[in-house]
Length: 303
Image 1 (cartoon, rainbow, N blue to C red):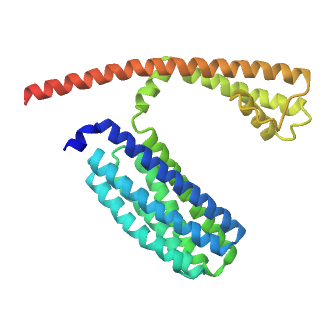
Image 2 (cartoon, rainbow, N blue to C red):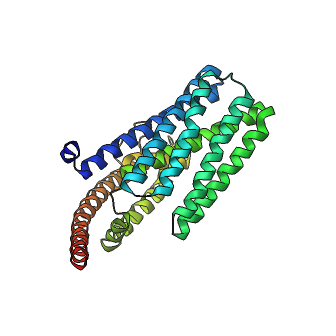
C-alpha cells in the first residue's frame, strides 16, 4: 500500500502509456526490417525479424490487456488481448527454430492475419457508434481476404512474397495506430474539433491547402526542375512546414516570389492556429473538468 501511495494514478497511467508506446514502436521497427528482408529474399533475416515482431507483439497485447483491464475497466477487451498474446508468444518462439519454407511461414502468417480479422470483428461488438463499426467491419474483411490469399499462394513464390509484404504492412499500420491511440488517449478530440470550428481554424487550413495546390500547379508549369506535379507538391509541403529538404528549389523570379508568399503564409497559419487552439483547449478542458468535479460531488451527496 505504501508503494502504491508513492505513485499517483496519473503517473502510473503516464508510465504505462510510455511503455506501451515504446513496445509498439519496437513492433513497428521490427516489422519494417522484416518487410525489407522479405523484399530482399533473405530467409535467415526474415525468420529473425518476423519472430521478434511476433514476440514484441505478444508483449504489446499484454500491455493492452493491462490497460483495458486496469484503466478502462473493459474485461472483454482484456480477455481478448490475453488470448491473442497466448497465440503470438508460442508462434514467435517457433519461428526461431522452424525451417524456412512457404508452408511454415504461410501458416504462421495466415493465422496471424486471421487473429487481426478476429480482433476487428470483436471491435464491432465493443464500440457503439456506427462509423467505427463499419470501419472495423471493412478492416476485418480485408484481413480475412489477406489470410485466405496467404494459404492459396503457398505454391506461388511471387504471390506468396507479395502477400507476406501486405501482411507486414498491416502489422506496421496496427502498431502505428496503437502508438497514436495511447500517446493521444487523454486528448479530447471532440473538444478539439469544436474549438477548430469556433475559431475558424478549419477554414484557415482549407485556405492553406488551396494555396498549396494552386501554387504547386504554377511551380510545375514555370519551373524546369519540377518534372511532375508531385515534385511541385512535395516542394510546397517542404516549404510550408519549413522542413527544407533541399532536393528541390525555385530558380525563377515568379516562383521565388510565390515561394516567399507561401512560406510566410504557412508560418503565420501554423503559429496562429497552434496558439489559438492550445489556449481555447486549455480553457474548455478546464471548464469540462470543473463540471465533472461538480457532478461527482453531487453524486456523492445523493449517495
